[in-house]
Length: 394
Image 1 (cartoon, rainbow, N blue to C red):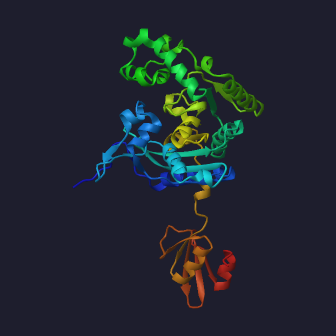
Image 2: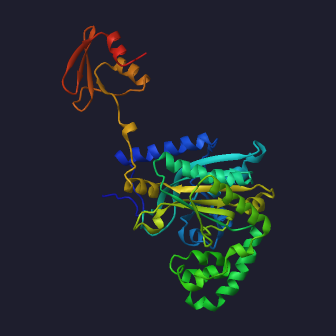
Image 3: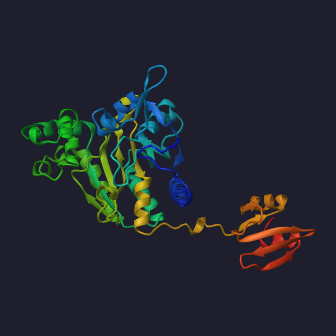
């Protein structure tokens, strides 16, 4: 019998696994400098949680969830994104009682039944961060800078921040009611998906991949006209600071993101490689204050972002920014003496037992001495102490 991987998945091995590990390790390093801590949540959760928090009328929940029933007939779904699981963990474990501000990073597999195109997979890797209980403008700004610093650490500096302000939850409700009235004459012109969005989530019509360039969408009312003064002033302060810091950004008044829970600041970070289209978007996030208040009964503001690892790797390759020099083994030893090999490994040298020909050094025992052969077949006869001194073995 021949076994094959499922459509929309891939195996990670060889050089690609080194690339993946290197990128994740660098992301972790930057996040830890910002005082973020690692959190891991289950790969599957209650379907109801995703419906309530992400929104049952979003594409993610209505079309893309992998859902099944467990032995007790409960509806369970594989996680389609990371924020909801982290939020659930934060509330369920009452982490708000342990620290005033909580900052987490996570990474791992997410699952969506999507079309396989432009670097999209049905099992894909995501790296994300979440901040809870910090509603200051500096939390918004720091999160954007954190994402930019991650990309800079990876060598990717040719990126632009696209940013918008969705206002408060109440502002969004008023805006959506106005959009319904505006789009009513165009109902027959909307694509099938947008006809469904019209009833429960009209703001998503603005982000339609099929019709978003049509005049009646381009000229639709803008949310900026429905935002209260406090939210406007807050957003203005954020843009002022970004400008002072010379952060390259563009205001995109149609940027809404694809999940219901966002309020106030939303942003995406994009590169500019021709031919990639939407695959140029490598980071997206924003505030989701109202969801925490609704679910916990507590006024706990929150903000986060997520980075698609596959897209990021493709862009780094496209720009020739993949650098594995630091992952190349400096000293690759082949040993006959198994006791000595343990001492070398304790000093962080990569070693193999045996005497294969593809090693940088081959070390063999000869009575009280060691025979050292290098790749050019140069031979040295060293005592144990001389050998250790040569490679700084303690």
